[in-house]
Image (cartoon, rainbow, N blue to C red; front, side, top):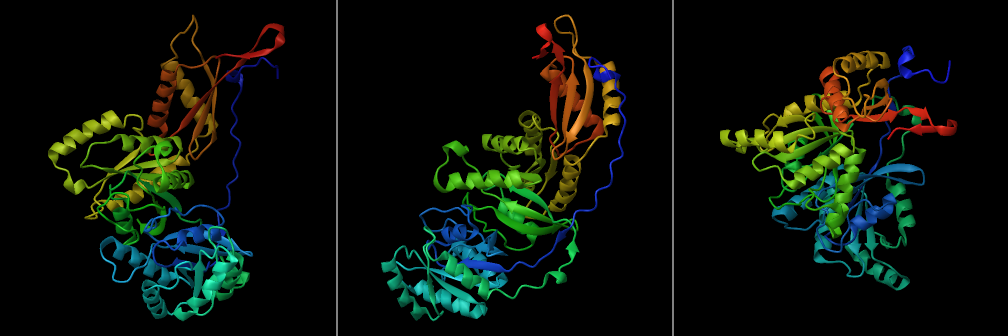
Length: 475
């Protein structure tokens, strides 16, 4: 084949793609370790030490962790799940009571419990009350004397025998002192591991959904509604959720892994402290998701914060479902203005799927499942090369590119090299006008769908022979 043969002269031959076997994974029961204690004893710092990375949000004020948050961990080849909890307090009221209830739910689901106390303060009345609660649970409990940062502090640890939980384990979660011995004791307390031959292959795991939105739009309320339990702490005060909260929920007869995230008030670069790390966790949750539910308050105007979140999700290349919450508060006048806002403010992502729901009343929340499935189908859609080029040829003949500089750029060939999200590459004679690329995208969506998924179109102008035989590229 000669070197100057144009792409348009090539015959596109579809190669049969062998069917990939269905994805399977080995289902192995992982033991669960719950980390509990009163506020500000260093539970989240200890969790970060156990999992080996700074993932749980930490700040030197009590009450940063509110929900129970699960992380994967591995020690000495044994995989297990660590559950971080908010501070447990006796006779707690209002939001503190909800946080304490989350801690008790984590204990009920755990195989082993780490009860963390502050060794620099010693046993308190709150610690003694927590011990009574732990004894009622009948779960194996290891007493962790945190903040034992040096040898002198370890001597103070012996006074904690008075709590009646057996040997205190002196640990410095901040510096790592004593954490290895503690984890060895945790593994010894776990149930015996089942033999590998008992494990059977299972289907693909649940699809991962990030639940994002600005503060107080009802993310935790929606998660609780979907999970049919108080999975996340809900409070009228904005910003109750700090850590991303994972929950397996069943909607539409299918199990989904939802991640409730912190509401973002400021740009990441302008946030500080807890809010800064929470914003990083939210961005990471979006990056690791397959589809994102962006929750908007339909009773309020679409804000700059909403726009920033939508940009973040779109740029991450994830499927998008827009859930307009609090629909029970929307009257006819508000619906009229909301339609105009959507046309004006969301014109950059007209492809996003939309559902109108009420987390409070449960209105239309079952419509989320079909929307999520549609977004994922679009996100993983692949157009055969022959079909794509046949359609593109007809499109260009009907609406050619405008003439620029005496000649019009031509599209020679197109291919879709990847999915999740779908990416298309157009091989051309010259660079294309951005407006024409948008036109191709719009027509591509009209023909093939892609509802709920972003698509990426790259343009590759053909290299031509320059002076001296060297190649040059237009643009």
